[in-house]
Image 1: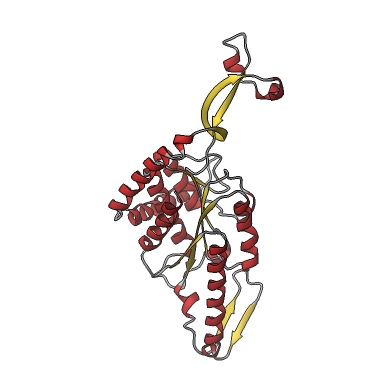
Image 2: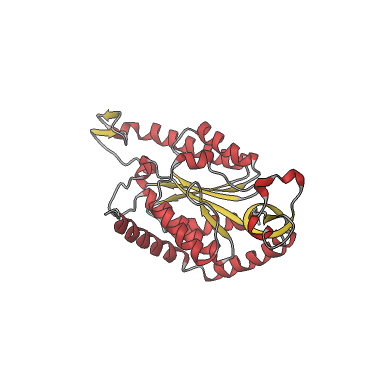
Amino acid sequence: MRSPFARDDTQRAAQLRQAGEAASAPFGELVAEAERIAASVMMGVHGQRKRGLGETFWEYRHHRTEDGAAAVDWRMSAKSADLYVRENEQESANTVWLWRDGSATMNFASSREFPLKKDRAAVCMIAMSALLSRGGERVAVLGESTRARSGELGLERTALRLATGPGSLASVEAAPIFQYGRVVLASDFLDPIETWRARLSRYAAMQAGGALLRIIDPMEEDFPFKGRTKFEAVDDSDHLLFGRAEEARKAYRARWQEHGDRLADLARAYDWTLVTHRTDRPATQAVLALYRALAREV
């Protein structure tokens, strides 16, 4: 029996994808640049193609004793008296893994004039997927895609997963990626800096680079509250009550600035790019900054 939510998820994915496409639409020159970058990758990375861990067929070769029986391609071997092994092309720098945080703190908007943080993150990631796919890159959603794809099929599947997928933190901490791949993580990054340091260290070990898209709501940065104000945790586990919230503004902004500065330092330490984006500003600004960051890595 089909889930009653399936249609709603599909419609929501279509709406977010449309917004993502709109965010990338003004980038006529940017798309052209993406195609030039793809051509450069073809001459560079693809010009040095080699067998390895990937999904694209490379060649058949004769079976060797050390390969074992599990490596035999029985369909190919059935056509000959010899045993053959199927080898795939190594996928590395032409694969971009995208992730949109689905944590409870991302399900927030301080005003109906602004999108939810998770929806703005999805729009930006879908726009990136559109630009990268048009440039010939393979794209996949971290922890939710079994393989990276290019072209319209890759964009279609990536958009759906970015719009409706869980975006679990486990995907950041354990999902498999190819060595030398590129990663774009979209989150509010409110977890402690040391937690994110441990997560990024995993990508450093894989020699993977990338960018962090920090999504923030204007209220989180501005702290516009006055008078008696009650603040509740997203899971209702705790709360704070201020008699005069404006008296806490200076201390709050100092802590907020410190967290942002430490996140920027962390990104620099791993040679990643940090892009900070407020939901009251056009998504095109964030997409442009992210695309340029990835273009520098090629």
